[in-house]
Length: 492
Image (cartoon, rainbow, N blue to C red):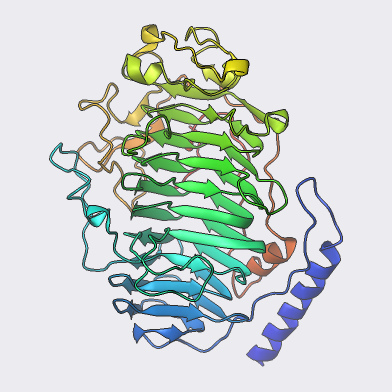
């Protein structure tokens, strides 16, 4: 009887997807969506490798051995119930040719991690990138979640992904899995597929944390820490990707924390909205010069960037002029930038780029002495030293100015905990919620809509009773940053 009910439900989903596929948006033509087969048999806990499908069950631990690969075949689904731990060993790999759905909850999150590896979460200057297990000296640990071009669906909810960035030990059977290549934390690359990442945590990785080569994406209310060793972006969206990056917390990322680039040959044009994110101390591990820090649009990409809070990042919002972003179809304002010192403030508008003076509501346009010169790619420096230490956003529990300048190799958040309503103090317990007197309150802009690009068929699938994990696209907030004062944003 249960199987008949499931078949009936999925048939209804398919019909719904066909009906809605005729509707068009400004971003794309919605494709016919066929629900993945949710195989009901349980995957036995213990060591796993090779072709896997079915259900990983609550409370169980699964181990992928060193240099091994778990492959979810095309047409199959691996479904994680809440409270599942997947232990990844050295250079172990997850390859998704079909669909992967990890449905942790706030009370019972799921884990893809190295189970015998501990995090460093205390702010001490002795913790350097070379010795921090977040990067394993640049070698990484395991090789991430790799979605092939055939992967139709990747859903990660309340899920930890940790210590990625290892090198592929062999030529892996997916596009981009070359022998010896440094892996991303998450790779998605199906232009007709959907990638949902909500309320998750990522910690420690060598290259890009999330690379969206193609596809519809929704990345909401996640926390990212220590992503990238001496390079690599945090979220890196390429041509053919359309979606939203909102209410995320980025701490100590190596390069750009959120990036949109139309590099590639896919369509539609890269169109990423970035709103109500918080960026802390990003951009200081990149060994290249002049790149990375917070928000980046380049190479024909378009999108909206509103209500973002950028604190002590090496660079503010970057809009490239060579290769130029799609500036005719971009809008960005009502953002907030803070810097402890002149070096930071002098890059609120990165020199050599064409970020418009109206990018920020704080500091007020004109107070930076920024020279807007798009014809010369803003090559002239400016003096914003008067803003050093000014406009403190007043976090609930985080010292500004910082006691040690740019703790780029330090994690500030204790993973898996909800920020308390009152400060707890102490290392690993910083709280980026806003005080009631914060100047970031009420400064946001809300007269725009998220892209909300995820297929209607996927939204229908995830709302079904047996799954009960609907997509939650959080609307823009009137307060700046990922933690609106009255709640409703990031829940970590």
